[in-house]
Image (cartoon, rainbow, N blue to C red; front, side, top):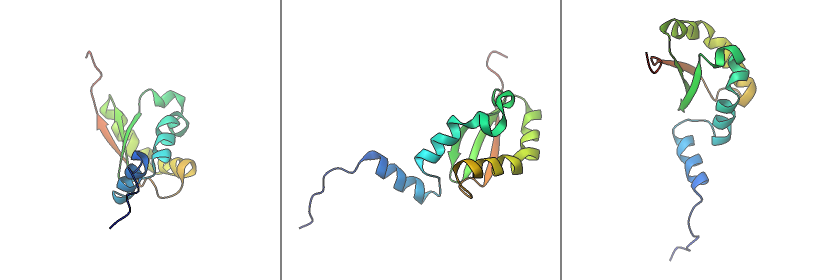
Length: 104
């Protein structure tokens, strides 16, 4: 009979799930989202919002399609900064979602 070890902590289960999906660890994702202004700069952080990590892709949101084009030009630079913050290869792409500003 298998020994009952009790419930598994939620964090451990989430870490295993994320690893299986190829995502960075919870702490790395939290660091990235919390320190996003350090990646893009304080001025751009109000225009380019980091909203999610899906696998090894960072999803960002912008209100203006022109900023979506800028992200493609800045992607290599952003990935280098992210690598320096949370470690190399954890985020391999930046994807952009254009969401019109509320109330417009």
